[in-house]
Length: 160
View (cartoon, one colour):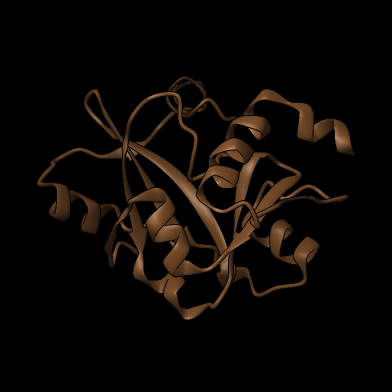
């Protein structure tokens, strides 16, 4: 499983993590963590402590929403917040082009293109949250406050 650590997307996420805090480590899971439920099962934690990194688009603009695993991102709240009429989930190929990650392994850090990030305040319920690190079997644990600092995400209530 250590071959996963040598994959370029995982190395990209790891470099940013280590520069931010050398004590943060990427954990390689035996089971896949493509979904929040799978990740929570593999980690033995509450599904709400899993950070879903969801890429949305409006026209040619993309933005990433970091949402608690037990919540759904609200398109209506996003539309109102961003003053946009039409917002949709990015297509898998757009996710790969913008973030450099494939769905199931999208990390909140290390994107290929600069994008605005929003973090849902519901994640603050947990002292430690877990986010993807560039591969469906790679995650990292971090406190909510450190994740906010690391991603420079804007905090809001963006879930239903």
